[in-house]
Every structure is written in structure tokens, then in C-alpha cells.
Image (cartoon, rainbow, N blue to C red):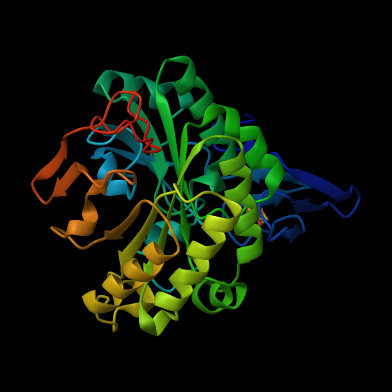
Length: 343
Ligand code: SF4
């Protein structure tokens, strides 16, 4: 760290020493920046030919149940010390936290946490899991990596929630410090990303999903369903087909109900009939673990054994009840594998 405010970024190259131009290689935007410029994310700035991360350690923290984070197969019914970071590289019309996503680190004073402080709070809280999410944590890449590394050394499990729109090299470097990753898919094709998020590329997101899955880390995926977004049952089917073919049928997929926000405040929450149709369509593709999100008290909130059909984890608005899952993540009735991390 060069000063309390500035941390030299990684994953960039100097294009011209005299002209002081650099290119950031953290995400596929690959911003070309003259001195004084900030990237699309507003969090990385070229100052006289050096690229700095402006939001190193900018975060809020809270204790949250894992289930509240669209993650059902990673220490179910546990508490996570959750760090809500700032800035994002996409501009999604349905973003629930637009002020946080488009935060200018130079204009506001925020509390910073060093990686040591963040882990100390997590350990003191008694949480088993440390979670990074809200807006896009990988924009705070260096801080996430440094904190995740220390968290692992102190025996915590690490969960990352991301949009997945990043380059392979930084994700590869981060993988050893992660235990589980939740990726929110924005659209079923690149045209959808551009329409809904002002940019992005689904092919690149798929590459990152596959990279994480092939590394052996637990991965859970989510996808917002709403007709007016173009994210309907047909789009969900395309995503499910890809998961079954390129990943595995035991990858959990959460089909979530739109909560009106940001530029889609005028839309109604997703019709339950469409959500149930998308659920049935995805199940037909052979996926084992499909959940409807933001639909409390629905039978699709529970986890069932893909082998014997037994209801194993019950989720209601009151809480989560683990009924018949072994510490090895197997069905206690038939010993079927559930792709769940319990210990
Ligand atoms: S991380 Fe930010 S600065 Fe770097 S390429 Fe992406 S949007 Fe641009």
C-alpha cells in the first residue's frame, strides 16, 4: 500500500511511459486510461502512469444467514460475516444497490477495514463463513484476495458472490483462497447483457463459471426471471441446458423473482406462474437442485434428495431446518450425494 488512500492495483500494463497511459486487465472492459482517468467501475484510477485501486478496504459489514445470500448448499443455516463492498463493472437495470455500485470512492468518506481487521471481526463474531458480496466484490480485487487469504489461514470458510464478468488470470489467482462461489447470471446471451446491464458478455461469464467449477470449488448460480427483461422460461432452459452439458446436473440454480428497483421500479414482481413454469422447464433439463428465490414459503425452497426424493432441508420464513443430511453432505436416508458442504 502506498498511502492510506492509495493501493497500487494489480493486473494492469503500462502502455506508454511518456504518455502515462495504462490498460487495466482485471475485467473484460480492459479500460484504456490516460493519467487522471478512472475506469468504468470508478474504482481504479491512473495517476501519472500508475493504476491505483481507490476502494481498497471500503466496505460495510453485517452478520447474515447464508440462505439470505442465495446460497443453499454451503453451510446451510449458518451465519456469515458479510462484507458489502462498493463499485461494479456492470450497470444492471434491476440492480438492488445502484448507489453502492456506482459509488465514487473519491467523493465520499467511508470506513476502511484492513484485511486483518476484517478477519478479526469475523472470528470474534463466531461465524464459520466470511462472505463478500453486494455490488461487485471483485472490483475490490486486491482487498478481497488479501482478506480471503488471511481468513483461510484462521480457519474460516470463504464465500464470494460475483457477477463473474472478469478475466481468467485474477480469478485463477484467487481460487486457492475460496471455498464457494455464487454467480448471478444477468441474461441468457450477450445481447441480453448489453440490453440489461449496458455491457458484459455471457460467453466470458460462462468461461469464468466453468473455470471455477472445474477447479472443484462449490458453485451456485442464480438468474432473475421476468418476461419484460427477456429472462423467461425459454432463457432459463438455455442456461439449464448449458449447465447440464458443460458443468454438472448437481450445480444448484436459483431462479429469482424480480424485486422492482433502480430502472425497473415500474415493473411488477415476477408472476409466480412464470416462475413455476421456468422451474418446471429447468427441472426437465435434468438439474437436481433448482430453487425459486424471493418466493417465501414455497415448496421449491426446500432441498430434496435427487436420488430418493426425500425432503432433507426445509426452508420457511421462520428459518431453515436441516432434517436428514450427513456431515459429508449425503442423504441420511439413501446416502445419495447432495453436492452440499456441511463441514
Ligand atoms: S476493473 Fe474497472 S478499470 Fe479495470 S477494466 Fe474493469 S471497469 Fe475498467
